[in-house]
Amino acid sequence: MKSFPLILATSLLSISAAVAQQKPATTTTTTTRPSASSTATAVERDLRIFADWVSDKVSRTADDIARETPKVAEEFDRQSRRIDKAVDSLTVEGKREYSIQKKRYSAWSARQDSLDRAARQPETAQQSQDRLLGEKVVLGRARATELPDLYARFIETTRTQRRNWTATDWSNASAVLSRLNARYDQVREQLPLEERVRIRSWQGEFRTLEKARDVKGVMAE
Image 1 (cartoon, rainbow, N blue to C red):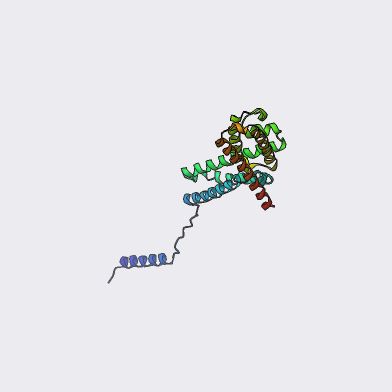
Image 2: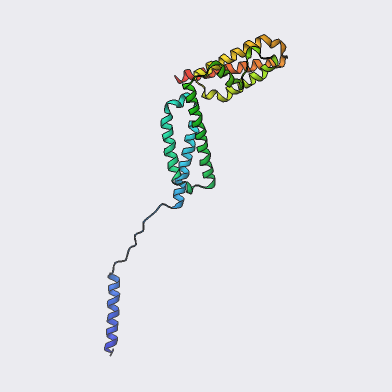
């Protein structure tokens, strides 16, 4: 026959086991926070969007972008602020790319401001000529040997700046070319055939670029 203490201990153990089975399991609630990797992915996506946006804007002409300038500046501020908040999550390459894109936009924006100021203060004929030729020249007294270099400067300026030219800029450039051509007709016999061929080529290139600009304007309308 079992002793009373043993029976009591056995009963207590049974009661404890029953209570443990009935006690509901404790649940732990955790708060999910964005991981560093998800933040990095988001800011990298924002950087790609920003880079595409900058490329689109800097490739457009002054005429196309002039009426949108205030909105463009606001959009730049919005996108850059968004990236700035998580810029530390970018890789070294990402930070470098972000810096490059901001510099591209800054240079483009400064150029737009310069063009706007120029539009408010139209160039004189002499100023246009000086800008297109890269120096002050009295074309009526230019030597024959100077003309190939003057034509070369003129066409190089046209190639590099024409995408931002207005109708007035094209008109001014055409007038400068006419003055160059007038002097060329006076002294061309003093030039070797090779130089005359080069000058004829540059004359034709300008007219081709000018016509291409006119065609683009008609299609835009």
